[in-house]
Amino acid sequence: MENSSLILLQLLLAHILTDFVLQPAKWVNHKRASKAASVYLYIHSLLAGLLTLLILWDFRFWPVALVISISHYFIDLWKILGKKDNLKIFLLDQALHLIVIFIAWLYIIKGFGEVLPVVESIFKSPVILAISIAYLLVIFPVGFLIGKATKRWHYELDSTNVEGSLEAAGRYIGIFERVLVLTFILTGNFSAIGFLIAAKSILRFSDKSDTGARKQTEYVLIGTLMSFAVTIIIGLLIRHIAL
Image (cartoon, rainbow, N blue to C red; front, side, top):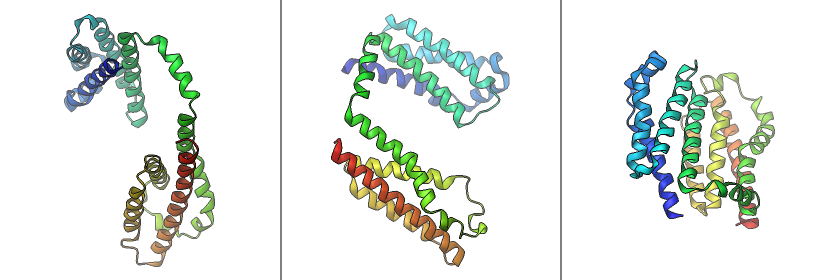
């Protein structure tokens, strides 16, 4: 088990070095401009395989390094041929690389036969299922619940109060804070929740002297407290039931 974990970490290290540490902006820009004709695309792909082989330091795995180089080339080529370069494309690009790395890891440790039993054990584990349900609840349904509960106050806000606000920023802030609160509860770090509430309260109440801004602050604070309360209840229930 220890050796298999080491191999996975080595493969991930090689990928991180290749994609983020040893790939200058000059290479990225040249690849986007020249597409398949870019020499840096080939250098980058070869580097992925070479680093994999060097970090594994076992030349019996040269076929693994070769597969990683070839797959890296085609994945990156797909990415630079696309018209968009946004978060979705970046995450999909990295997911494809990680899938290749995962398959390479299973090949090296001869672990293909263990995949289905592990997946089966995950879906039969009450702890894993309970924690997964808790995170899904705080990310999705709780957000809709808070939105419905604070809807009447939302209409009281003047449109000028939210001028210049980032699109859907409040929703994403709520999701991240609920995920953090739930994580703190499940790991037993209850004091960290107080620091999170204090930090958000200070941020929201700074420079809010006019009436419209104060209404907006009160609206946000109501939503925050509702969000925290529901998440804390879910977290405590999960700790009581599954942990």
